[in-house]
Image: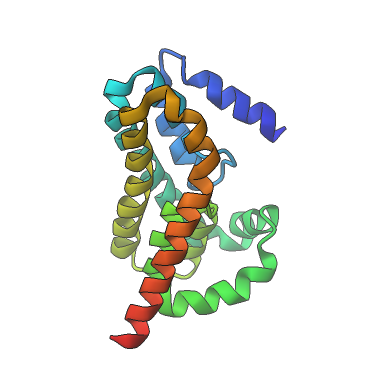
Length: 193
């Protein structure tokens, strides 16, 4: 089922309303949808490299606004919708650990998750549940989601179709490595400064 959904999202890249579809996929992925917007952003940026940064902006805007929906779900409906999402992604056991991390690193967690391959929707919902400062939440979301999508756009703008396979293969490990480095820096700053 996920593969069929992924293929459908890929076909949207050639649709006349692809920009709207990109916004909607980015919006939905930040609160409930399982397919990341990268699946649509990459083919769109390859087909029309001159619009790659426009697509990254649309993707960022949709993702941040969708993240606010995820935040609202966590804030107002965690006991119903939020618990379902946590169970769906198999993160129930991590709940207590994440709660304790949020006490010290709330906005930083949002920033790392926004850039990394960690399911962003789980973080947006959990941020609402933990009542993370909304201004900090939005700023961390804009910076991290923007960094992720503009990096993809820049790579495709520079390399085009020749980088598509490389990005699809290496984006996950690269963003994970960058996220681990960022976590290390944040922890060092928190405890040494």
